[in-house]
Image (cartoon, rainbow, N blue to C red; front, side, top):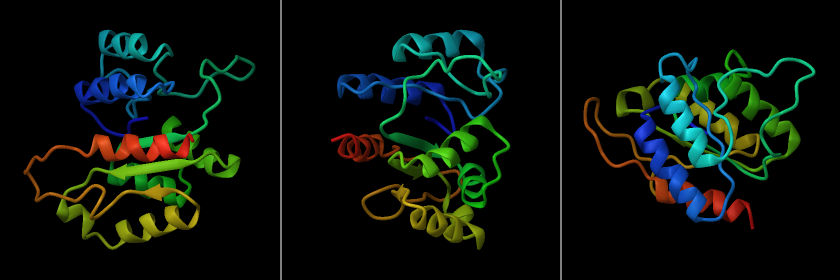
Length: 168
């Protein structure tokens, strides 16, 4: 699952996830309008499941298989804070908030710059999620924030390895 973009990075992790013999499904934290139908269709083709970005209609079947582990990456500050506070204004946050209650193993890998990481709510949100049983890969051995405007490779391998361990 992705809380951020770009879709190019998501395609790479989906391909690697499929190589790990895991069933992958993707979600866009946006409305889907900003991503574009062609990108969503391509991501759906890679995963074998439609991309979710909104709640299903009551009475309609779920188009995803039951999750045995969930990766939330790249997890934005907004997604992490909303999730920790139980503010389920997006389908993604609602799904992972419910997954805590269902006992599904969850891994979150933030993607914030060092300025966001200094906000007083951010460490509280990470602590809340950890207390709820979410594996949060932040700091050494996980995602380490970069300076605002600086780009570094995202730790997809670390994220996928963590989820792979959850599935065993």
